[in-house]
Image (tube, rainbow, N blue to C red):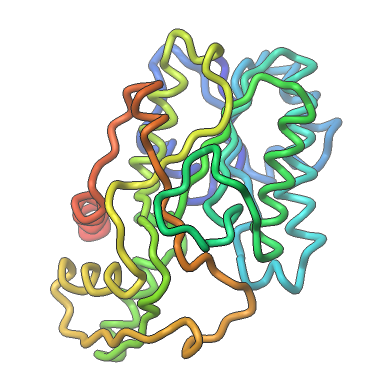
Length: 285
């Protein structure tokens, strides 16, 4: 395959570079400098010139709080750019694999969200990501949407790096304990996507899939485990969402059900603590 990876400088894009695709594939890693996905003409020209047959879209506006102040910027990347990729994918008969988010849900559930669970995003970020999903559906292109949650890695800025830095500097931290979810190591997500794309009958299984690491925890639990595995002497105090005000409302519960991706593609879903351990080893290495 000739594979286009957009947003290649982000966490997931860099995870793909690390994991790699099949040796028989030619992969074009692009970020905004190489390809502006908000420019429909540029996308069409790139896909045609390089005979792309698979697009993996990692490009996203992910600053959840800033999105509340910059809704146009979030919409431009999370919806309009996705619509461009989908339109070109439909025209050129490409497969589009797009990464979406748990923020399309309102967080009011008491059991893991399946792909059929009703969506009801509460903030600009979630609304623009859902708009992107809907643009794909409207285009009629061959597409797989993978929703994920709580993404972290040894690359870029993320919760794991923030907690480790703050724990070393302060020795005492307050972390929200009433928001439940499941962390996702970007390298594991990248491996899952590669597994999906390697499936001989991938075109017969288009639609939405959920992927995060296995298990359930709060941000507080996650922070405690990060500090414990890192060997940092720091006390973590649980606080409520109300005690830690932010601009964008977070889902109180956003655990994703992974049964469909397991059954359809035989994807492995490592447990979150074990995944964190591997990530921290990479950071130390």
